Length: 128
Figure 1 (tube, rainbow, N blue to C red):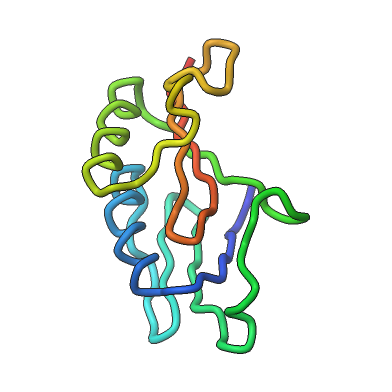
Figure 2 (cartoon, rainbow, N blue to C red; figure 1 turned 90 degrees about the horizontal axis):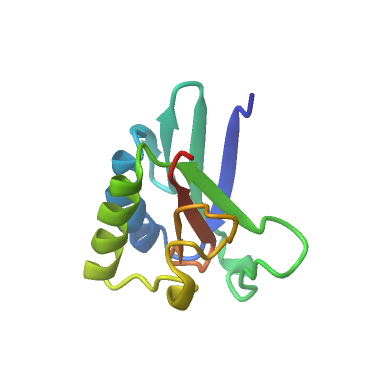
């Protein structure tokens, strides 16, 4: 079982604003918060977001480079995927692969793909 994932972010305030809306919808609860970071927990696994230190801010993330490609979350239902898609659109979040949504991954998998403020790709997948 995965214990935690820690992600460095360019703008902690923007990231916090984004995930404070998304993660509670996915069943996560705020777990820790401190001046330069915060975390959300679901069962025994948590996600940690930490402000990138200034000397590393000029480098930006891209999922095509070596490292994390994306994070995928379980949805409770197709309806939840639809609700979250609408919520994301209202807050101005770009839905990826819009022309193929909600079957962008093929194989009849019902999901929404989008990016967080640092362009980390996220996916929310409905149960089969």
